[in-house]
Length: 292
Image (cartoon, rainbow, N blue to C red):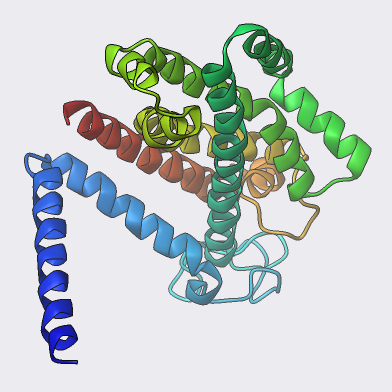
């Protein structure tokens, strides 16, 4: 007992010391703009996560007169039904943010796995996998999303499925390229000659080597996906009404652009805000990883 009582805290202290040193080394030299970008991204994540709690009203219920201008009671006004625009925008941001994260997450896992296998295997197996990848890559995203929605029914989930089907090949190509580059390096050849198993090489060297570029690509893809999902929702390929989606909210209010500008403009501004924050954070992350 005496040994355990003193040994565990000592190990914990050394661990914390190493973690603190690694953290300081990582953030050393980080620009103010990067801190601002990461801070804005963290704030966006919190707002999107707790949108239903932060929203002052139920986004589906009318709380005032239709088309009321922004005021103290309704900070962003009300829509054509009398629903609070701020509440609907917050919930729409949640839908767009986590929808984009879902597509990126699937694409990274599925596409990255295919690229890892193709790059590590090589030969005819690599050629077959890449031809299949090219076939999916040739599919136009909006048209495929339209086909999926037409076949499965109109819903946001079906739209995400259609987009994810054409998004994963990008990560397959990225991971495959990194793995093939690492395979040809001298230290990998030395490890193979030394008898290191393919599984160990894959797990300890090839996969970690492809992680940085994959993370950077994923962070930059968030903005593109938010814009794409909002565009599809604008065209009517999202969840049916009265679900709060930024694209469909702008589409419904576009006819009132001159009489009630806040109805279409506020959701569009939210889309632009998410895209800008995600882009700046992605650029900061890319620069940080490249400088390491």
